[in-house]
Image 1 (cartoon, rainbow, N blue to C red):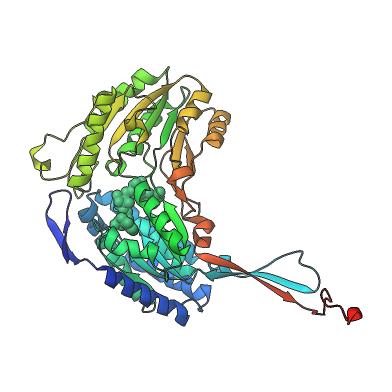
Image 2: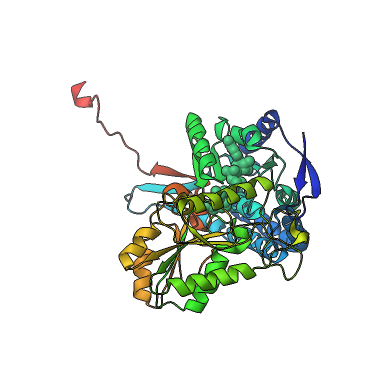
Length: 477
Ligand code: NAD
């Protein structure tokens, strides 16, 4: 079936892609299985595979502008953001391209003089990789690069909403020398072509980035074959500001934390938690600046934020404005679509700020995944920590204070996979990324992001084998 791919800025059709069927997905799994069992990739040296990843990074840099433009057309994000994404994707391929040494066998110390005990890092096998629409290429690269370095074969499924840059990436994998059958791409919906990746007995690992609800479904269906599961799910991320923070900077970051990519970021700092002594002025200034955010075409230089990804997603974000108002939150900015005539065909929504929020509100607890800030107040360090942890999620959070002992203390107590002190948002290819609690299982990036795709195997070699005479001892014969 042919699927139109829509530009969220104006609803124009930018491409038509062919959705795969369940049978196509099963055929892709079979190709990946055969390629894995042949060993043509898994038996190459980690250094060989690393060199291929470095070639992919070179090709991404060569095609950067083309890929970035495609990502902006597909997601609506600004071209500046898309260029950053491509740079980050190349950096991830380079990082794993430098990590071949992590796959070398390790001798286990203390095994005894007459024993060689060794850990080998073998590939898991066939990996099913499923990505969301908000960072289509970036999220896929966090899976593809380590999976390939470890020697796996894979079947990847991008979001049906934003498949275009993943198609380009797979062309580059081919050009860089990934052999036939090793990296397979299937396009289409979750139930049709995503589900087989968690259900099929020939898939050994499923790595998923997306919503909590889908993650739960994938975990449940992966149980049937006890395959390995890696999940990067949602977040409801606190951004906590103490009164001694550099307030000008904290205000500036409060906006970026929540409105970057129209809030469609898993680690978005949507839950602003302010000390009561700075609350009123801080909120007034955040609201004033939220009203100034320039929405527009991602290709225009002065555009600060693009549209939401789809009509369906905007409807979900809008429903949270109604929920918030019903729950008694006070709208102090946005809460509506923009008025500009030139934005009426896009899925735009104004940056929105709600004050007087309470922890039990759905607006505060649910992941809205749009440009919505909720503001809560705290009066003590203990209360700030309590509110910061008052979520089923545990992906990321920020703490602002010039008292670094205080900031480190709070960071230590926050139950989130990433905590920023006097910052919000950065991540590093070499630092683990992932969630506590319902934000996920496992880690991406860093050395752990590679080991997700490895089976450590203990090989124990006895150098002086001799009868143990444990059973049926000769003296009893
Ligand atoms: P989604 O769960 O709707 O879809 C994600 C992917 O799963 C898509 O490719 C979709 O087609 C597929 N899918 C849907 N049903 C499936 C099924 N039954 N079996 C297999 N695959 C299925 O999520 P989304 O709306 O695309 O993305 C937004 C979500 O992703 C947000 O919750 C966000 O927080 C999360 N996210 C998390 C991270 C992270 O690093 N933790 C990063 C980006 C996005």
